[in-house]
Image 1: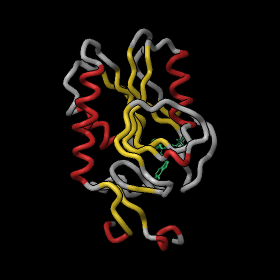
Image 2 (image 1 turned 135 degrees about the horizontal axis):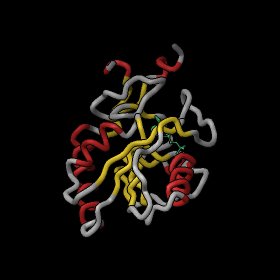
Image 3 (image 1 turned 90 degrees about the vertical axis):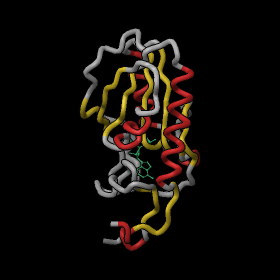
Image 4 (image 1 turned 45 degrees about the horizontal axis):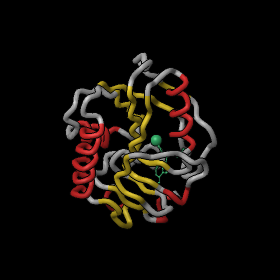
Amino acid sequence: MHNDIKKTVVSTNMLNAICVRLGKQISEDYANKKPLIIGLLKGCQPFVSDLLKNISVYCYIDYMTVSSYEGTSSVGSITIKKDLETNIEGLDVIVVDDIVDTGVTISSIRDLLLQRGASSVSVCTLLDKKEGRKVNVDVKYVGMPVPNEFVVGYGLDYNGLYRNLPYIGVLKEEIYKK
Ligand code: IMP
Ligand code: MG
């Protein structure tokens, strides 16, 4: 698996530092609240678990699965495949995702959660691909900006694989031709 990677974009050490920094920031911002952290599966998984360990305030945790990419190109708007178990009315929600690209996923979810009565919805993403943006969405917590390149690892996949890489990297071109 490691042989398929052309270059590392975010190292394991950098990922740790990001989780410490964002965890601290969230803990300060939500000092007197009990936020509900919503992880977007499956990509959020390593990130949200490392992030949670650095959040020192009381918080609730839930997950959603929404449709995202097929291969390396976007498929437009989203479908909910697994919904929340929590009634979010009156809760301060933090949506955690692996990467914001077009912004379609995060902005649709944000609208949905506000419609369902959340008091507030903020967005936390590990990576921000600003150049890919098609809809404007306010992303409060960003781990790291990344260039408009397809990346894998630490939750991010290519056709279901590479989520278990402990760092984030770019695949060699030949992998896409297989
Ligand atoms: P958006 O709706 O275009 O912002 O898409 C966000 C989703 O697309 C992310 O949660 C990822 O699942 C997927 N995605 C976007 N860029 C990449 C990438 O470079 N590698 C892997 N998945 C990506
Ligand atoms: Mg995703």
